[in-house]
Length: 341
Image (cartoon, one colour):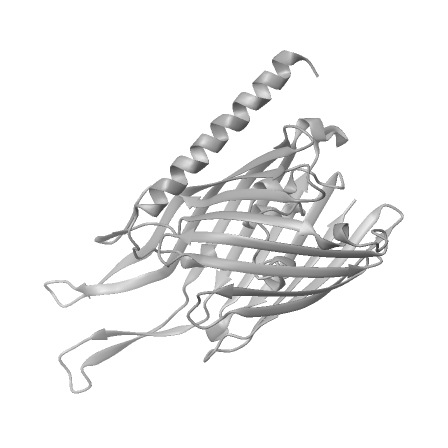
């Protein structure tokens, strides 16, 4: 590699580092605030969720677009797709899918990806205040929904440094709602929805010490959104994480055993600082057992899961499951299928 190319990459790395430090300092000075479209903060991928969402510093697959887009920069296959479902609390269901592609089969061109998330909140009963005996009028059922679609790109700038970003369109709607009555007593309706463009950005750096990675990500950066007469922000989150394969410190055969340990520190806009811990033991590059813990949290904390994967004649298949108790609410279950070739 020529000196000019090395200088160019080092300049990019320095600029990104300065940007991330500036953003993190700005976060530290920001007071906690309410946010909207909280569905963007819900972890969907079963593997990441089982590991306590501590995956900012992990190179994974197309699902990295939901966490740190730089995580798909070192894709092991030319094409990768993941999709799954999350059975969330209060009968809320999340569906997600992501696909990543290596143009011309050459990682030097980077990795292009698309991601989609849809939220079904179920049917809710609608009422409005009225001056009758009950004090309200039944206006029928409504079905809120949330939706996100994104386009991502990631690239290995060197064998140690990768970057990635997403551009997302997000929308949340409760459908057509009754907002009052006209002067003639007719019902006044309006479309109760909000939409916005948002951005994610992340980096992963291999330190050169064994398999130790350091990662940083910024998610859901956008302008203020207005819903009817109220303005709000998306759930902007800054994360800093580290990961390592603990087998590096043992005499175990790395082809038979893997034990990834990861930790993330998070600064969300609407909550105090949090710590996420995760671990994954894999046997024969096939069977996985995972666990994680995060704190402080309101109700949840512990998570666990299992996975199985196999590479058959160049076709990679994986199935992951995650379980998380959620305090006074229902237990949360996630399942994700991954395919690569």
